[in-house]
Length: 346
Ligand code: TLP
Image 1 (spheres, rainbow, N blue to C red):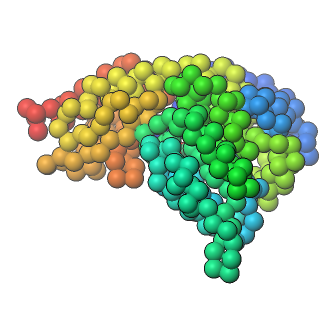
Image 2 (image 1 turned 120 degrees about the vertical axis):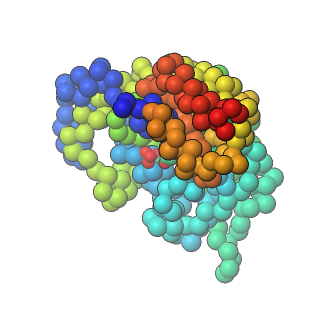
Image 3 (image 1 turned 45 degrees about the vertical axis):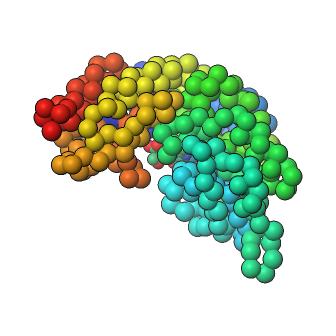
């Protein structure tokens, strides 16, 4: 059976043009600074975000890990939004790699309140750590792809400047935020000292994420990447599809947003589903599932039997639209939901 795979936008396959670019990429040893294709991608990524320099990383997690390590010293603390990916889903790299503790702060769909953040900033003494960094995420994965407003970025920058803190943006899906809000990605990036964004999610490159910041920080980040085992050799073969991802793929993300909305609108009233379609702003749908007779694992299995893959994440169910989900896949998912949950069959 061929599946309609809504588990994540990470499942997107490279386009034919990306595969051709991979085959034809001019490469060199990137650890020795010899790969022109990687260098082109790094310059481009920095330009797109309005920063001085860029670093090609094997994953978003490594990009975020390097950023935290750049901006912190051991025995310090980092303010994170309580549902953020960097805090909940990156295998505790803050403590493991940087020797810092995360301090979770609640939010309104990913947008932290500046006063709440101020209250959580700590000055060091014999008992407590110094707060040195605020992490933001946009779009916010675990808040169902919510767009964090630009106002929040401005407010966080003010709080950071008042207290001598840095700001890092996990912009894994920043282009989705840009499309949904109409705010240019550079504008979000302006309020952060560093930005990580992924080429391998909705933008459909097979591998890779970019970290962008000022030149000195990226030079340091390059050494950190090597220390973490992320120095890659003839990696222009992966940078080449990344260039296509960055230049040609952002424009189509709005199609994914439309499909996610259609799926949410068509299914939110079915028994067991708790979802407000107004909350679906981009390509991620997360809904609570509580059905009198069907558990989450059973529901996911029944969906799979009908050729539709979804993911159980942090207590809810997540479905993500992307390049390899078309209108027929959405129709198939809606039909599967109805067949499994519609009142006459439940
Ligand atoms: N997210 C993945 C899984 O880890 C859940 C997904 O399928 O959504 N920041 C954000 C906001 C992310 O969503 C992810 C990946 C990352 C960072 C990490 O990127 P990778 O997977 O490249 O390490």
